[in-house]
Image 1 (cartoon, rainbow, N blue to C red):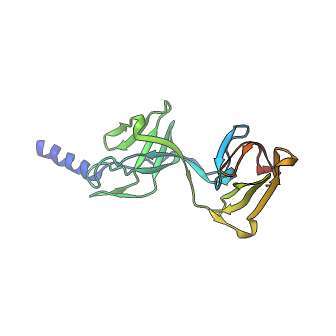
Image 2: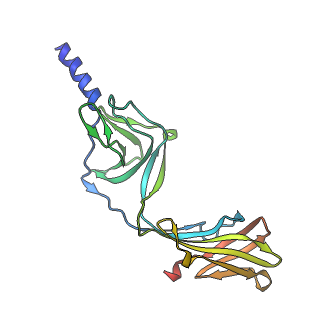
Image 3: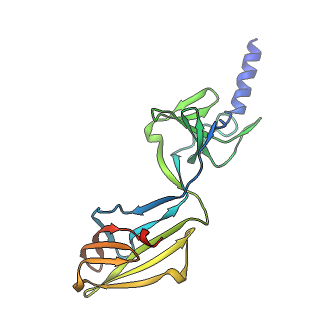
Amino acid sequence: MRKIGILLSIVLLFVGCASIKPSEIIRTEPRYYIIPEIGVETTVHVGDYLIKEGMTTARDAIFLNNDHGRVGWTAFHPSGFYILIGKDGDDLIYQHRSIMPGMLSTVYPQIIMDTNNNVYLNVISGRKLLENNEYSKRQYVEESGNNFEQTLIYTGLEGNILRFSYREFFSNTARPAFSLDVTYDMRTGNIIRFRGASLEIINANNQSITYKVLSGFTSNW
């Protein structure tokens, strides 16, 4: 019996953990975002964006800071993004994009979050609790042709003239036909408007600009 128990333990070590099949699949939906938040005083430098806004297929994810376990011997969990794929009862299931090989099987490494926001590795013995400093909650941006982004970039001050560069992106690729330079004369006021976006300029020089976003580009969508 002892030999059987030892053999079984060795087999479990080789196999690792079994991936949980969610009872409810969570679908990816396009999301709107705007950076920085409307009404927040912000300072950026020449070459930085004043406003970034768009639609993306970002998904909720957990980022594991370091590898856990050994490949092929235990329930190996590589560092990186674990993307929310669904629910198992009330638990949220986050899954790595890559299959990890074991000696007798292959699995998708998974992380589980319960209703109390406790975060666990899915391992052969059940669950292994992660400390808060071992992971972070993030957004994972899918590579998709539907991703759309608009930015307004600060390019400097010449006398009373503020200079900006407007750009549009599809799936992180700039479209030259939708990139153009914009100038504003500060003597006419400190509110600038472009393609629906409105910004209040608080202070500007040839190195940086301080401002608030009053509205975004969304009126043009």
